[in-house]
Length: 588
Image (cartoon, rainbow, N blue to C red; front, side, top):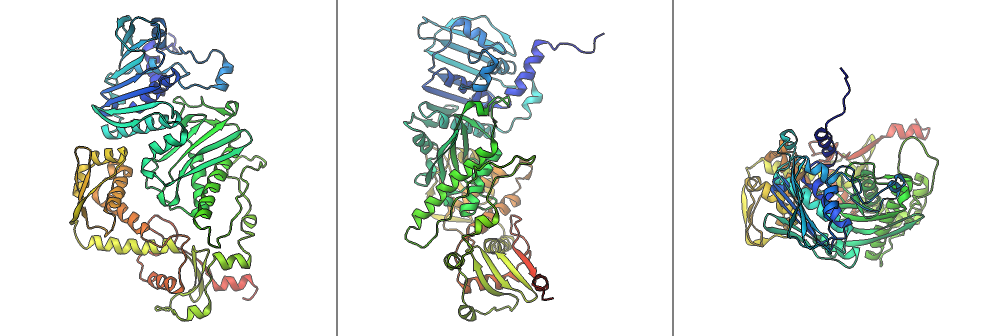
């Protein structure tokens, strides 16, 4: 008896479905991409139970004939490619010919379609891979597809799906991504009978970005950069509009939404080097990369969510340069009347010999800091304070004596037998965190009513998180009234005193969304809220301080219970023993 056998068709279809169909959002991505390839101008998506029970896609594309409709349900059937060379210059979305066959093998799928020259439409139904005969059906020009009872026949797959609201948020994200890629198409999303997203056609990419990023109105900066074989455009939110979630980060390569951690890391690096960015905060952006199709492979992932660049170093370097230029121009416009110097942007796209390990290309330390170390520039940016000023603010504790502030970021202090260099933000953040945590631990959660209920402006993702965690939100001390078109905040917990109660609720929603289901205890969420509040109220990295302010911060350091690290695990200080300094200068 042979030990190797050819798998039966139904098993092969199940395996293919595992590559393409991960969750309702992946189904919607495949079907909407087909609608876009069909030239649709209006696309409507409806989901129930996050897409587990029902998904409906309606478009006004060119539709299919009866023969094409039947072929579309077969594996490896496509109108997009015909030769192997076509794979290296793919300009369409649903080119693999897998989606409908894979989806229909794990659900009940009904397809109704009609072309402009047909008198009637064609309807086909597939249940767990078994097709019905085509039949005539009334239909507008375009295609209507419904997917019901996802994974009912494979309960082992179904148990890995997340909650209805979590699956819905993934669907919302998918529609937003595709809408950013196609501004000239109108998109609507329905959660049951309720329309939760409507994006009418936009004249330009910038207009569509502003639709999707409506909450950042007035705080978006245009990004534009060109390099040989590559152009980058898009928008990035101003540094003061960073968020506690990665949900506002979108990348499109040749019009295709992709997920690339290294590209996201390039944006983050540009933000850190330009204005500083806390570990738990994330930039919001939309970046569109246009690159020669021959230099990017879009078929390296079954769901086409990842791409592979022929020259990744040049691409990542160009992204860093593009975002850095945008942020520096913004800073110069804000401080056009000040003496703030213009620091040159390193040429990240300069080619270097390839090595076996990846690292972001960058200028050397001496090159990057050659201008910053001149005496005239230090006088403008480092804010070193005179000994006369220091004499007016002696240390109360006697443990640390403030010497200087460097680049409005670091505090240098004399600690007796060592020199201490402090991260001013991390130091203040740790102190605030401990004070706030002790305040919380000394009393139980109490609720404070607002004098006037506050009308909230929540994104659809935040509304979904509020619905999913409504009981936990109430247990934390928030009283929120939902219903109709308005969401009102009536009471807030007294965990942290704040003049922005809506901001406190948003921090809480982000904390609940990021905590895993096994860690959503109230104490875990409270700690994360306090961490965020401590960070937002601390002296910022890059903020000038007087000698008195710096000395007061150092005097409080001795009272800190856990002084080594900030709440997010970042070191607070660096120590250089005076004996080591003396050895360095041959004075030991």
